[in-house]
Amino acid sequence: MKNVLITGADGFIGSHLTEKLCKEGYNITALSQYNSFNNWGWLDSINCKNEIRIISGDIRDSNFCNEMTRNIDIVFHLAALIAIPYSYIAPQSYIDTNITGTLNICQAAKNNHVKRVIHTSTSEVYGSAKYVPIDENHMLQPQSPYSASKIGADSIAMSFFSAFDLPVTILRPFNTFGPRQSARAVIPNIISQIASNEEYISIGDLSPTRDFSYVEDTCNGFYEVSKSEKTIGRTLNLGSNFEISIEDTVNKIKELMKSDKPVKIDKKRIRPKDSEVNRLFCDNSLIKNLIGFKLEHSFKDGLVKTIDWFAQEENLKKYKTSIYNI
Image (cartoon, rainbow, N blue to C red):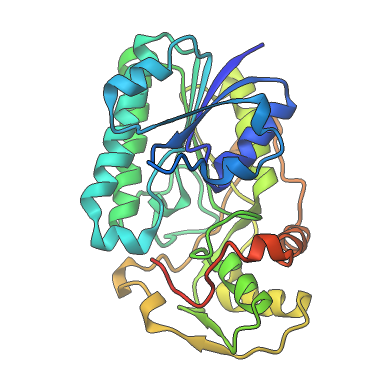
């Protein structure tokens, strides 16, 4: 049985990945960011909580990282600060967590002879597309402090492959959505406002396009990539090869939820002009050709599952839909 460490296991994708790997029979250590309330984030809600080892800590501490990677075969590194609007206000915290934290994980993995490190990137590193679909050779454009920190983290991770033969793979998901996602993200934002019977749907810029993937597909991608030695030393896009505007996404969700609520543009939700990523459209041919991976959920299928989850009162009450939190 393989021993795996999932950093950021208490988050949206991390909690789903924890469930996926638990089903596959892995021996899991799940990292939740330390807090004095002993809160394990979304790990408190998963169905296999009693089958895994949960630890609390912080990837910004190098000694802690070294200790928790002992006797680990695979590290799935998802821990990061991800809220783009907050990165405008507190950029130093993104450098400390995303870059220094990744350095600590890679150094610890090297020290402890970890067999695989799957590092999580983001499509935001590409910035607004210069051509579509976006392949892994597309230029990197730091259009927000968040994306800059992730470019730095990716570079640190790959440098450990080049300099120290650390078996690193960089997996670059495009826009993942699904149950448990923060209402700061566009799809949960729309769904939760409709489900909460808000007077209108408050949203930012409607014109950008995104490439959405359902969270179960993203987690399957992490799993399949970790099993193949062909992916070592590679950077791989993970997306749907499907592009849709935010406006059309709103309309699709309204149609599925049978809602006629009007849309109101909220200037607080609009990024600075040159920071907005206007177009994201994934070329996923490399991961398909390399390991035969493909998505199992259509955009509509994923939306239906996400809507069903948010429609449950015990889930919806966890969200403060009337408050915009960056």
